[in-house]
Length: 378
Image (cartoon, rainbow, N blue to C red; front, side, top):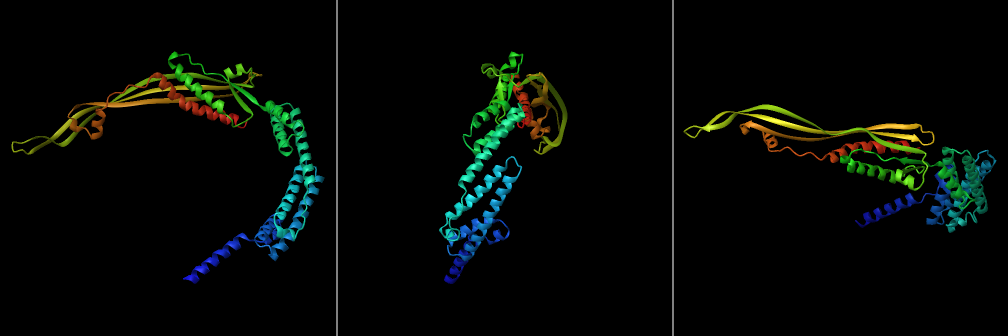
């Protein structure tokens, strides 16, 4: 039993060593020099005297260094506008290889003093930032929304490459506001005091949606009140109006059923024996439907040209239902379900304001989906 336990232990230990201690030879054979260096370094950190890992590290590092320097020279000679980013990337990879080797004492005996290109990396970053900055200026000079959007991203990349490069931050802000579409959402007008509270609630939902909208940073929604307070000149105006709505259309339908059931005890003989017969009843089932519906028109107009750029209509319907029944005759002719419905009484329907609110729910869902669809990639 003890021998079996020892065997299991050594098998388990061997699996850990095999899984965690590759020398990087396979990666070297495949031409993945960076990965080969990383794996050889990892092996030498765990097994400092591993001769195969030492051999792999020396070969892989030399090849990786030559490969990155070749790519750097090719990039510098290319006509690619953004070639300095390729140069920067390869200098970063060279420096990363050096950092990996410097973190492993055994590796430094194989590759003493691995080369790092600190100044070269800094210069390539600066040149890459300058290229992006100039590209952003070019887009900004085109003086249109789409180009301003491209300029914004160019200045953003400039900032990422070289924080505080010239006035890139201020230019990025200028590009943003040149790219933004300002949309003023006009309030819905419902000329009925009966539905004012419900219409106000519907409007509040819309206001909440536009207030929380953040999918496209280059679209900003304003309520009409906000636009007035902030003196916003809109790029577009989004108008919402009910073409029509009807609340409380009532339909009552009566269905009459003649019922009978055979073999029902209807009495007994003098000898106390049951007498069977047929019982009958007339069941009247009432169904009431109160329908409310409306059609919302959404139109988006370009403020400067007054041209309609988008128009959609969204229907909404809500039907409140009730049913009850009465009967005449013998209740034993009714089933349990039929008898149960006769015990129900006609219910009072919701007030008109509640019915109004209900039919606007599907309209709201369609509306926000369409606004999102239109502006998310605008």
